[in-house]
Image (cartoon, rainbow, N blue to C red; front, side):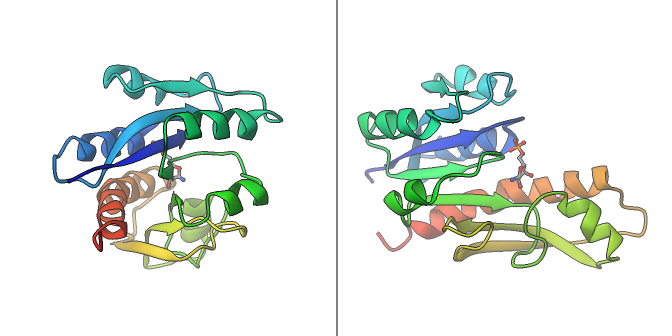
Length: 186
Ligand code: GRF
């Protein structure tokens, strides 16, 4: 199997990055992580790029971020961009140019609870379930075609922290399932 060449965009902890890298070590997994780009030089996730010897680039200038990213994405022949806790909004042009090639993970059952602070809002609304969604990125926030959704039950005692932990465990599984699903028809 010829693996597709993928890049992960991060801004923070990078636990989803770590999980995708680990999945990609499986010879059967459809992608290799060939590049990590962070828009935050303090992102803890950079450590995983280093640990697994994956080339990485930090681009902090918000005006030149996309121009620099496009250049290296072309150099590295990247075919899929995985957003994983990437906190910068990409321009419509960038999204159009990479149509069908950018995916994101969101900590709610989309289309419910788009945007930030999902756990606070889910708890405030006294939901019984929440979860995570992996979706293609389109020009509207958290709105593209859904690839995989996974549900978890909310307990009476759940807080933002416990919910986040539970949802993140689902995220790690869901991201890898979504990536396999995208390429399963090849
Ligand atoms: C994840 O919970 C994801 O749903 C959201 O940002 C968080 C990133 O976590 N988009 P990490 O950086 O992968 O640990």
